Image (cartoon, rainbow over all chains, first blue to last red; front, side, top):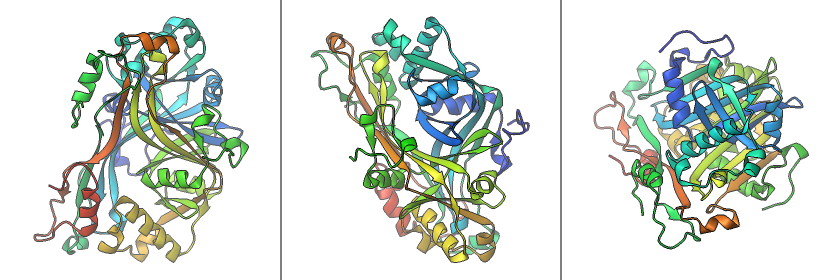
Length: 223
Length: 223
């Protein structure tokens, strides 16, 4: 863990001992999270929109239709905030006040740049596809020129990023440890269910290697 | 599904067929989500902070320390946005472009009010505790006057809320259905692992009824 925030505004103020400014920590959380919450301001009103993201090197990429308000607003170069949160468990203390969650979160502040050029946009779409299921890009039809034309990709630099993590059991007040109250952690994780082949899947087409490998990672097996 | 958004700014513009403005739908998503992402603006910069929430009637409650920037900013009555997202699955199409996620999300716009009075704040803390594990509040030490004093509770009305949902299989372009590419859905859900009793748990204290019932809901059993 590094003790220094990259900027004053990205410094974790509440529970600073849970802060981590290491890129390795930040990258791991961004890479594991399947969805980001992107904040921007339009007409003085903040909006927080869930969106797929993909980290590529020192940037987090997001994408959307050229017609989307989120993409149009952010493409103009305004302040943004991208946050991801992984929930690891419920922390059940002896007192109501010390109930908590175990989590790993990342907050990225900054202004996004519009990713220009068809090749760069195509590389970004590959990153989004392989973020869902590693190796998937090589199995599917790649985007047409028309599809690429209607897609905007934005890149947010990781220069002002911070992670915040809580792990471990509950921390109660000294006198509460004598209470006959059960305390502990209920771990939570995202698991896959049995895959559901598309109803229009061509006969004889079996699960592709990328999907089989991805599903194999989890607790639940392929149907 | 109701066709009418409560306000122009809360109307879902992208993929409007996925919008739902029914309170029943909105409430169910808010109640299932364990964490919300709260957006606010400070010095022109949007911040998106993960936080525990609890819906009580026609409001969503959040809380924090009286010293937190989020709580101080929002308590002053500024525009806020609270978003929750449940991830239900990966949608794997035959083309990269039509890859998607199945999800259920809610966006609430508005200004929060500071919840005043010790009794109201205590009721809010009960709601947060029972949101984590229903029935937990009755098993634990309730907040002291000092704990209540340091806690701020904010309530955001549900008057400007919208839900957006995607479900079902991939939707490919007509000509792509002939491709020999596997397509389908990988369902995702949050499951509980084996509970971890606190290392300082008093001997003879067994898992409380609320925790046993909560864990029993999931796929994984109590250790």
